[in-house]
Length: 620
Image 1 (cartoon, rainbow, N blue to C red):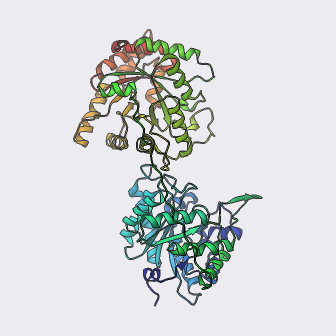
Image 2: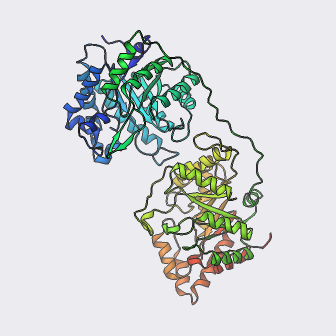
Image 3: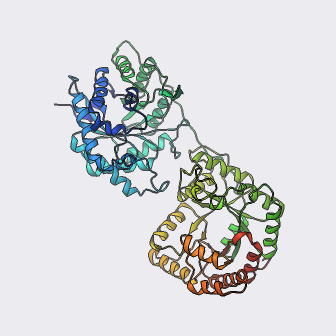
């Protein structure tokens, strides 16, 4: 009878796991764009041969070929209905290979990330993620794995959901939970190894560890930090064979078998209970590690203990922006949206901004590539408006088209230019604009970016926990649609944005004050308190009947009542009638919101100036 897995980990010698599966499949001619997990059904002999090679190399733990065998990843190949079949076949193949060993070899059900963003940094709900993990785990458990091995997770929240799913559907199975780290020894979303170790240990992982990442040297640093944070925890270490290099169109890993043998002893000296390999490692690497661990003449290396420090520099807080001050005092704000020019000349825009300032606008919102059209950088526009006119701005900051690295660099650059008011939004998809084939991806959703700004940058650190010298002082806005078809869902999303730290909201255009009344009433019913977040409601002066029809029929979230459509259609001077309608709406909604966000059509800023006549008092 096989020794229970956790009892085996209590033995003096660490348990040696296998190495890479994907590397070996690729070396045998399987293309990188193939579904490796589906090979359990279509080419089982190939998968079994690789398992057997690791058994011959001395591995005591085989990971099933199921790293991406969850419904979200399999959906990419139209295989989402084969989750159970693929996972159960994988366990059978690993067990057949383990049976050839003549010694105890454990079979671990490999579970990787879902490949989708999990809330709050993505759109997938945590309960949906947990359900997907549970589906895969249940199949692995029923097929008879000895343990579950969760690996290469970049987001701590997702690893926690996977672990929770395991505890729900397979509480009898030991769980190894491993995270992967960027070259700066932080996860993609900025968690330090010690924080990860504590969180996973408290969540109930039987073994916590690190895999993939860089080579053995980096893994040793991360492992040591984990051990220092939770000395009583069992830990694992499974590094890549160094950093990958592209040579002749092929991905190669350069760490030698002897190098891995040395680090097997290093990991043992650090107290790792499971040692193995990840990307780029082969049976030759595992055999070298086996020989080193079994050689009594090789002494364990001395481990140098280091103390990582990531402290935040203290700094006196800046004065809040004028916009933030006025909102805090409950004063009504008048804002106008301006589009950057499609050239490098700002003369006309500066003249229009001066017109708006003279008319009583408190702040100018500068859009970022509205409708995905190429325009000048909004940072430059904001900076010039503030430096030349002394007019405060709100920089629109979409998450679309930016990765986490660029997002944070852009925000620091904006702060350096004196821009403090930031409106976080998703941004328009590139397919509707000038460059439909341009990159349209994003690493973070608006709610997550609000949290990043308020809980990281405004606290003096970046997402990775590195000091940025002193805290930023951004005043952060979010988007709101009071006329959403599903009010409850919109309110739930708004609540998340408020919890993340939103300071104000810019509302979608409304053409019926009753829409605002209904939203406030429903919000108070659901939240048992009135909405206290300052809202600047969008006012769109209609320019023509055609313009009104376009907004009503093609812009999501905008509904124009028949009475207003009729007024515009019958007007002798539609732009002036649009101004009058906007003035009426602004006057009627003034006591229900804390500001007006005027969006003039086609750059007719003179019409926006007329709209604000009903409420603006220059210099107030």
